[in-house]
Image (cartoon, rainbow, N blue to C red; front, side):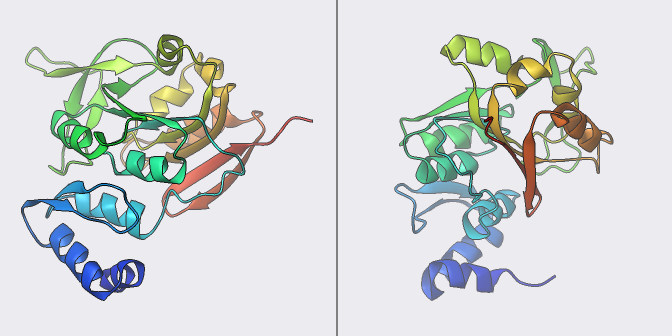
Length: 248
């Protein structure tokens, strides 16, 4: 596999690029990193999928879409350890970012990474179309591979769900300017729900990573829900961007 080191050096310079690449990919420790362009340090667990998340967001810029407007509310679904929320708050410093993550260890790091930013609001839970309890699953052991399921067993450890409409109601908000989703296949249940249109009609832009590779039907569910909603589609890396066209 081709080394990503040159990307780090190009982005951060020789010495800082070497430092960030080495600590994130090869060290097994939890590091506190000073990253050029970020106002505060961030934490990263070496030799884990934190490296992939860091690379995608801060090195390759997969969320650096041009929206054509300035969002005021960003809902970060599947915030993991908070890198995406930190990226968004630097790109849109006036926006409120709601960071939702179900898994406890990821959420612990998310709290640390977002604590200096008063406009980021962390919530532990799983986005789902209805209020219930879900079981956590992880078949790879990596922090970015946690999935949720309604297939509960008697000894299941469960996590509460969060619905988008309840979240908007609790915050007293009319809609979402930017919805980012990296929820490991739960986009299928979220978008195939008959009530999706209630919040989708209030959403201006969506960034979503689809996971048909382990939950077939994700793409069909998302595209079916978005049909007729007047969104323009583009792609950057593994993420699709849908921006609502203005009504004239």
